[in-house]
Amino acid sequence: MPDEAIEARSTHRDMRDDRPDRRTSSLVKTQRLAAALSAATVLALAPVSGHAQVSDGARSSASGGEKTPAKATAGKVVKKSTARRSSGSRRKALPPLRHASPQGEYSLASDLSGFLSARVRSGTWGVLVVSLTRGDTLYSHNADTRLLPASTMKLFTTALAFDRLGPEHQFTTDVLRDGGVGSDGTLTGNLILRGGGDPGLSNRFIPGDPNSPMRALARQVAAAGVTRVHGDIVGDASAFEQQKVPDGWLARYLDASYAQRVSALSLNENLLHVAIAPGKGAEKPRVVLQPASLAFKIVNETRTVAKSRRAKLTVAKRPDASILVRGWIGEQSQTRVYVVVVDDPALFATGALRQALLDEGIEVSGTVRTGESPGNAVRIASLSSPPLAQLANVMNRESVNHFAELIFRDAARSGDPEGIGSASAGNALLQQLMANRVGASRDAVFAADGSGLSTLDRVTPRALVQLLSYADRAPWSREFHASLPVAGTSEMLRNRMAATPARGNLHAKTGTTNEVIALGGYVNASNGELLAFSFLYNGHDRAPARETIDAMGGTLAAFAR
Image (cartoon, rainbow, N blue to C red; front, side, top):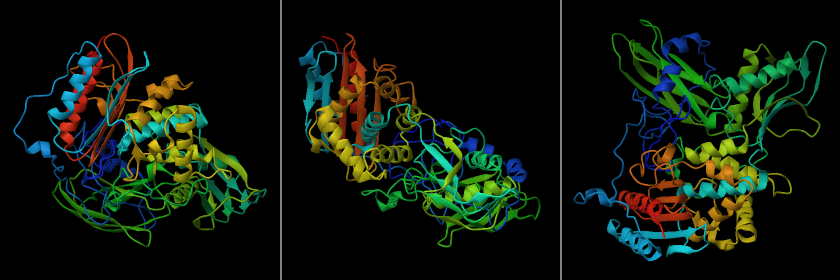
């Protein structure tokens, strides 16, 4: 979803900022995933039957490094499209906008004002720069205008979660039984997979392939003496509200890999990967789902074409919970990997647990379904997430919306009498934090979601800087600062401000959508002062706006008085 790309942090994903208008899925187009699920690997997996799973997506890519994001679209392969041009891209080429080196407050204000009108010809700017060292305002422009924040909203989510839960907090995913286990290992009752809002339940943190989390839980179930389940496998996602798509998310986002459904029981970031490997000779291609889940069945209508390295494939979700794979793949082709956004995350995860139980040799007589845990259920297996600070690093440095949405609702649970996480409760707690502890106006922030993807979100530049000031003083200040990408060196800012004094100095959260370019964070001025800043642009002149923000960031780093 972003305009800028970053390097993949794990073996199977190329994460991005919140850009909703790109067409092909970033996760699909990773060479590493294709290698991990190569033809040899696919053949080593259990044979695909009518109960394996698959998903749809976009054309896989053999390119490495930074990538153009892609959209996972049900029912067809989507070719990479040219990004929509901003109005600035049609103008006559101008020399690069370079940072200034102002000496004194007046010179800084003059330089920043000049930057705001040097390139951008439409839209609305909101800017505030404050010295946290001296406590004075260095520059203000529309500081109290409510604007779309894009992914700078994740700064508010981070602060709220750290404030409510603490940076060392961990989330758990549990397996419970609601019946007794006989001497022969038979559980007379159900196994319940209860989600605790862990966004990291994937092989991003649990070593191994995408089946690793459920495999680990299944082994714990076996270690508890269960050899047969005379009942169902039930997925419990009741820790969060039932609404899976936040208010203000546009319909066109919903098949994209940056807009996963929201659920307290989530697996593999609620993305299903489909690997298609050619057969030998006239042998039918093999289709494997990662993670494997008995919540789906595969309908494989593909064929192998001799003496070809190419493929023409489509992968589609169908209403009957099946994945339809059609087309052909060349006998000499590499494994093609596709991605599908899972519509029912709890059922997806529960089906994956059932598959893992079967792989572990545990028989199951019942079905896969969703429901709530009874009060007398006994926990027999559990996985804990990494500390919240580590999850926040992924969320902010790679701008992962899935992490933000779950963490936002996790924080909201702490203020709900019934312990249920909802976006509305998160917004209420955030506004309470802003008014009672940060010292901001309660209505200066409205959070319809935790990621900034919603078109209903609003923040003021002043509220953002006030939050940054509060975070700098908080007991979790070190973890908050550490979660931000650094100009010219890491993640979302790796290729920005690299030739300015901001390199290795400025650390901030980016925000990018069709109509937003934003940056909020910290930078040390050349005289040692710590500055907090918010640059929010709403409009369609996005490329010039980004250039302007980078010039202003370098200028703050060069400032002295």
